[in-house]
Amino acid sequence: MTINLDRKEYLKFIKDIVPIAKEAEHNSKTNNLKYTIVLNSVKVPYMQCKGIVSRVIDKNGKITHCGFFDWDNILETLLLDEVRYLFSMIDSPIYLFKSSKTSEKTDCNGDKYGNYMGIVLLKKPFFDWIQINKQLHTDIAHSIVAEQYRYKAFVLRMSKKSIKSPPVFKAIIDGGKKTFKGEISNAHKEFLESRFPEIKKLNKKYNFVLDKNDISNLYTTSYKTASA
Image (cartoon, rainbow, N blue to C red):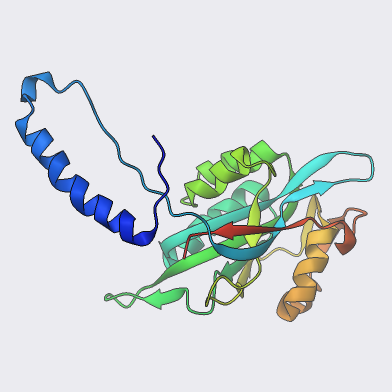
């Protein structure tokens, strides 16, 4: 059963249903619990956002994807460990971003944590990136949506989200290397360099194998989200 409610009726429904559910569970025979009822509420997306898409289509029609990663509520130290591990798997720089200006905080132990994004310009088949994401503590929904949504690609927000700023560049993890053999998406590279001047400056030290696309070949999309 699916019902659509406004905030007032939603809160009333939750308030009314919880006592009924608890009473029903209390009155049930513990040796005959054959039924499970799951109530799952979903907030309808309402915040307009714009993002870049991982898909790359070459002149010959070959389809690959850049690596997009989304970490939520993770310690900075763990994030950096995971990104170094990611580099060991792909041998290509990882561009790290804070999801907004205010997304990085310090906890009661003095440790930094927050929400972060990562982009890898290396071109791989879509499901290679799905499998790599499964080895990291990235947001599961990020991969699920990429597989199931009609656009069939990863998307990373590059716009504001309500009062939150666009992503903020944090660092490049490159393993201390300057030369990389795997072909990368020049369209995504040009986009990052146009959006983040510090990336354009840092990229000058790298020797990349570039494809023949440019920023005009970059795929973008608009979408709505309810995730604050």
